[in-house]
Amino acid sequence: KQEVTQIPAALSVPEGENLVLNCSFTDSAIYNLQWFRQDPGKGLTSLLLIQSSQREQTSGRLNASLDKSSGRSTLYIAASQPGDSATYLCAVKAQGNNRLAFGKGNQVVVIP
Amino acid sequence: ETGVTQTPRHLVMGMTNKKSLKCEQHLGHNAMYWYKQSAKKPLELMFVYSLEERVENNSVPSRFSPECPNSSHLFLHLHTLQPEDSALYLCASSQGRSYEQYFGPGTRLTVT
Image 1 (cartoon, each protein chain N blue to C red):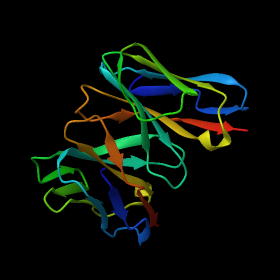
Image 2: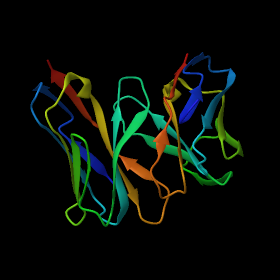
Image 3: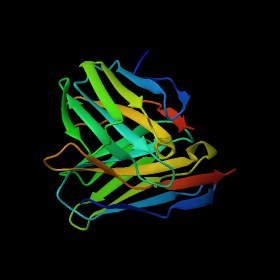
Image 4: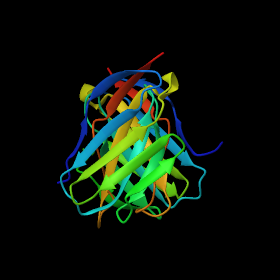
């Protein structure tokens, strides 16, 4: 069974600092990995999707890397802003089935 | 409306009530999903529909009954729920089961 761990569970950073969020997974036989953002009491917004053959994806201030062999992904958010405050979820899709296995999330607060 | 919509956004029901959650996607996708998000736990996949056929039931109790009348609509019928079923219920859709999932805003369910 795929286990997804996100560290740290919660962090606070001053505005302008770069954010580094870590995700690890136990089974490297993945199809893709997806990072989501969730605001309190709301649904999920997809941020980046990395296919298993890719090493990274970038969108604006966001960059996600994938090291499949070591079972790790990192989400970098450059020059953080208060509007980046949210919970960030990592989800891994295994090969051969429909399931997205989610971590519990990194809860981020950016302090103005 | 665009994306994935869910109604109602909030629902309070007694343990003997029967209610239904509705999800509609406006993305032309052919796969739809129900997830449960409880406090302090990772998102749990409940059901997957592909081309209107249920392809996965992740050991969900029978008091939850899904229905997918067409590729754009997904329902979750609820009856005789328990207080521990209180959670955020999220619907998602994708174009094919292997592709990026788009989530709705969720229904916050409270069982009293």
